[in-house]
Length: 237
Image: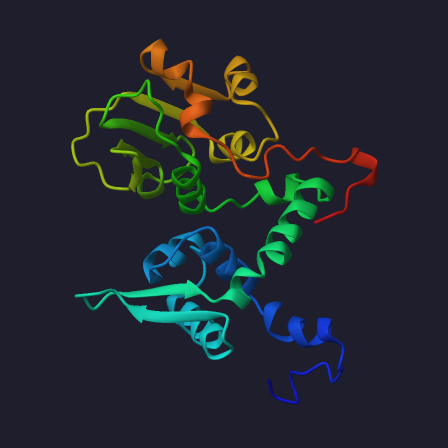
């Protein structure tokens, strides 16, 4: 860290903040902590971050000993892995997320949602279920988005879930239709799926044996069970 960029303090908090608080770094760490290993998967989790800047941040984290970089056996594909020091940042990164879920107002975060980020997180929260066939295909339709960001398909097969953004002629079992805002509110636990359906904010189409257990296979954010503080106590984002 250059003297110009340094806080000039010996305080360990200041020393860590000098690089952890640089733009996008915490979110890159979030993706690694949530299991992303390839450059492309990390990039999908930080969709608005340029690939050039992502490469720079990963290099810095590698140089500092927070991340390791290696080639996958028998290929030219690179994987990134957190070191023990990187894994130890879990309490820092998720602690910030927990605080935000409890104490920050939510409305500003719903004004400019990245639909690709929502799709990627839905894929991450989705889980196979013993009552589902294999394959099982869910079409997500974001009604207010432009055509190239409206559609995504979750493909459940052999205990894995993949996200496709191109229609490969899937035989769809269930379709979910909502605005990006309303689906995000359900995913984050700010509104239940049942409540959104009752209000007409979310539509599930498909056999009742699948739609009735949708919350089990679709899942929600790991933060969804953290309750908001009373409105008068919330912090403006």
